[in-house]
Image (cartoon, rainbow, N blue to C red):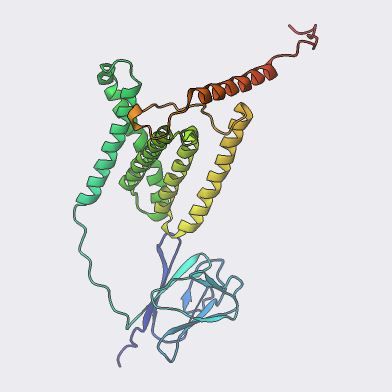
Length: 333
């Protein structure tokens, strides 16, 4: 007597993609739940005793009925509650509780065999390029701040060591979190993310300063701190997607919310301290005059604008001076 053939394979995975339960389907329908009477038994408190019944349709598809469940099941963006019945398309993942359920039918084609990975020349090249760009950026900034170029040779070991240490610690912490949640370290991937995000933020900041100089758009350069904050938020989001790639939408909402709160706090702090939203009064970087595209300001207009600035500064200084009519406190030291 021949054994009953396998009609399909059900697999339940957790948030990290780790396999937690599987069932070789040898008959239809099958039930999924926490009860021992279920065909596929799941250990998740958010799953009912008998949560789902899965069956084949006369047309050859797969049909799912939600049984006595409070949380129901989700297929893509659609959530189905108690008593709902829906079709389960091939290749889609069904979410129930905190687990994900996948189904592979016996008649489904088997994917082609993949080659074993060889030495990752391309990945290694991108990593070296990211590190070289990061080191060049830090060395260039250090050279611009030195009064004597000969000092760079003496500071070179400390600068390079500081960059390597900072990148290693930052990427190492993210790699430990990735190892904790996914089982993979992904250290060099986090190194690439850290370096490329830093280079991107610096490039955007430089471009904003250049455009501000070329077209007299000082606002682009005055909010450099805000650009750095948003760039850091984008880099942190990419780090988080390595840890939880299946939660991109939720992570984007979380990081965006924190970035909005940090932006409000930054702008509010600038306003309370300086009575303006930006923390800069003028362009801190000047480029060659040949790059200027904005028309020259007439001398009369320049003097008028300078006079209005002087008037505002005098009013602010007057507000900060103590009132002459107010008697001094005799008890004051």
